[in-house]
Image (cartoon, rainbow, N blue to C red; front, side, top):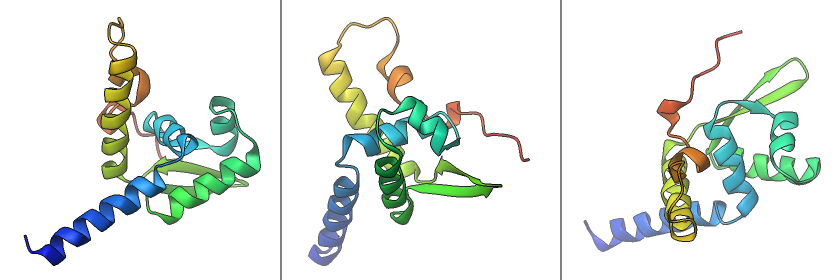
Length: 124
């Protein structure tokens, strides 16, 4: 790999880490690992205001980490980036293991299931 290619990799990684550098964004990704949700459902899981939630959802959507679809007046968000989910899962699981070393439920099941564990909603 050339130095120019290495720089592109490091720059891309830094951009992704920057986008994921806010705890609420990590919580949103974790919540969406469990399946598609609308803003009301996300607000029920994550303690924040609706404007703050919308700002972070918009940032993650613009970055290509989330997808969305409209159904009537509601917007449903879903996890689009496997790369971001894998990175969040690895980092959060490692930190949780260090904090909570001996739990009966695997850390990975508590924090972020793999996308393969999530049942996709049926088409409406």
